[in-house]
Each structure stands twice: as structure tokens, then as C-alpha cells.
Length: 523
Length: 53
Image (cartoon, rainbow over all chains, first blue to last red; front, side, top):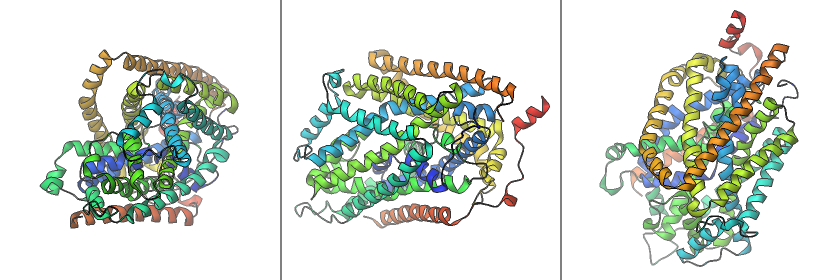
């Protein structure tokens, strides 16, 4: 089974760009600057970089190592890889989250991706020429996403449905073409294009100067200062660093931004050959994500918003409000705003496209190796599953309730859970030393010895502490909302059904793998 | 923009850009490691279990 017709990456840069594409998403350009400016960017960067070193890089090495190890054993999906790493009856079932997390996130992420595509289209056609009234942008977003009423998006052929289907087919077409001819080929062009567009946007923002002479304080230097100055409000840097919430959010941003705990990197790395480098490749993917987030994302949105809208309109906004209502207002004030608006939303679409693609591959790999379906049948089955989920999210569109609930439970809670399971299996069952030895095979850079200590003690502790604080802070509110809200309850039932469905398939796969093992089919 | 802001912005932006630039340069220029420098680690826990059984 697994060893036969095994796919591999075509080049080293191919997998690096694919992993980078998975990691670089809307969060790099919208979520990161929003959070950093909330905590006076300057002070925020200290816990941010500490989390990168103690959490981000070690978990990336763990995922790349587990993935390539499982791939050599003939497995490409989390259940199979966990089974090859830990010979225990329950180990493949622990990998269920490696399927549920990417598939579940895809169900709503493809929707957000289609919003970016529609906004880019609307800028191109002049539909976004709505003037300078913030209410117009709020109404535009509300009408398009159906936040007023459940079921409204299915009341006819609405743009939301059309653009969701376009995004959906763009994803499935690439996945159907396979790893090398699909994902790798697309990312090889999409990632450089994404960087190029972001650099054009950066140059535009840095050359804005003082666009309104009546508001001389709203200039580029003060905009950068709003983003990067430490110790705002008369606080010293040390006082700012005492804010525990900032440390929590910095770690969370690193964690989500690098796509660790998604079940994606482990699958991507499983397509590497035995002696392919993973040490340098993983570091390069991480560094590419950081470049996109800090050097590009950190320099564009907040300074531009400060210049055109002032500090009052930036602070304390959610990602959707910032991304789809505030940002269009910036372009309404900017010279050639229609063109730059198109460029910005096309950039976000590209970032989302390469991320959403990666969320499909783990399930495709599992269907092929676990239940023995061919590529066409796997893509058809997965298309059906995610279409059901996306339609569910679109139907319950009022106040983006279903989307928010799925994001909370799958996009936060289950990601933390999966990452914790992965790190514990890697560090304490497979062994931190073995992980490092695996990472050192074919390595093009040296991995320091102290990383073993990090993987074994520091990273799991850091992760468990953050996860526990996150649960303590967020769970009571959500459980209260859960008891009062029918849509939230229904969404949770949907997630439960999805988990049971994949557990059932894993059970089938385990029987199949056991039988093949008896025949000597598995290495 | 305060001196502290300039310092943190430059260190962060130049730091991540250099990190990315150097990593990418190494990826593009380094050839795969030859066989003899591979780790001596050839056995994993599951292999021992297979042997035991």
C-alpha cells in the first residue's frame, strides 16, 4: 500500500514554499499588526520572539521529524504516522485531530478566502467605490456575508455562494493534480508573487508622508511609532512586560502563525525522502513566515490606518472588522485607492489560498492510505464532506455565529490539544533524543544539543501552561454562551459528528494496516 | 517615533529579514549532505519492539 506509488516533493525549495504557503495567511497581515499595536508593538516583540524560540521552532522541528519518520515507514497522515511512532492500539486514534483540525478549519477558512477574492473583484470592478462613510463599508460587509439573518445567503444566487464555489473549485483542482504538479507548482509561483505584492504595498505605505496637511500629526513616522513605540501611556518597557495577557497573546500568535498543531506540516514532511534535509528547511519556512509577518505585515496595515483614520479607529477591533471594514476605509482615503485595494485583497486571497490548500492534503493522504481510495475518489469524498461543513457555516451566517464557534473549538481548542498530544508523543514516547537524531539525518545545519532539553521540558511546559491559561480565560464564557445559543450547540454537535466519522474511518484503516502488516506489506 | 521605537523596529525588521535571507541563501547554495555524515542513529523504539516480539 503505502510504499507503492509514493509521492515525493520535486525540490527542496518546493516543500519550503509549500510549508511557507501553509503558514502565511490572513493572520500575518491583519491579526499580527492588530495584536502588536494593541500591546505597543515594541514591548510585544519581546515575548513574541521568546515564544518563537521556545515554542515555534522546537514544535516545527518535532513536526518535520515525526512527519519524515512516518513517511519513511510508508505513512502520510497523522493516524498512520502516530501508529508508526508509537506502537500502541490507541496511537492511530490519537491522530484523529490531525484530520479533524485541518478539515474543520478548511470549512470556514475557504469562506474567508472567498471574501478576500470577492473584495479584490469588487475593487477591480469599482463596486467598492463607496466613499468615506464607515457605515457604507459595514453595510457592504454585512450584506455580503449575511450577518443579519440565518439562511439569507441561500435565498438566491448570491455573490457569497458564487465566490465560495470559485474558491472551492480552485482548491480542489490543485489538490487533484497532486503534490508536485499541484501544491508545489502553485506555491512556487504564488509565494514569490505574494512577497512582491506585499513589498509594493509596503513601499506605497512608507512613501505616504503626510497626506492631509490639516492633520500634520497623522504622518508615516507617527504611524510607525504607533505600531513600534514601547511603553505607550507613560509606562516603561519593564512595566509593559509585566502584562501577562501580552505574553499569552504573543505565544498564541506564534503558535497559530506558524501553522504548528494543524496536522499539515507533519503530512507535508512525510513526503520527504530518507536523506532530505529537514533542519534547514524547517528553519527557512519559519523565517519566511516571520519575514512576511514582522517585516511586511507589521509595516503596512497599522501605519496606513493611523495615517488615514487616526489612532482611535485602530484599537480594539476584531480581525473581521479590521480586515473587511476598516481596511477598505483606508483605501477610500488613499490616492489610487481602488488599485491598491485590489492589490491588498488579492494578496490576502493568495495567502489564504496557499493555506487552505494545505488543509486538504492530510485528509486526502489518509483516504488514500487508510481506506484505499484513488485520488479522484478521495477528492470527491473530501469535497462532499467540506461542502456540507461550509454550507452549514454559510447557512448559520447571523453574526457569523457558526464560523465563530467552529473557530473557537477547532481553530483554537483542538489545535492546542493536537499540538500538546504531538509534543508529548514526540518528547516522551518517541523520545526527544530520537527526534533530534531524526532531525539531524541529512541536516544541512547543526541543531544545538540544548534543543533536546527544550523539546523534552521547556516546550511541553510552555505549551501546557499557555493552553491551561487559555482554557481558564475563555472556556467559562463559551460554555455559558453554549447553553444559551442553539446555533453554538448545533455547531458543537456537528464537530462531534465529524470526529466520530473520522474515528470510524481510522478504525477501518487500522484493520487494513494490520492485515497488510501480517502479509508483510508495511515496512 | 521614539528612539526605543526606532530601535525595536530596526532590530525586529532587520533581524527577521536577515534570518530569512541567510536561510534562503543556504537552501539555494548548500548541497545535500553526503551519506557518511548522517547520524549514527538507525534504530527507533518501535524497531526494538518489533525485535522483542
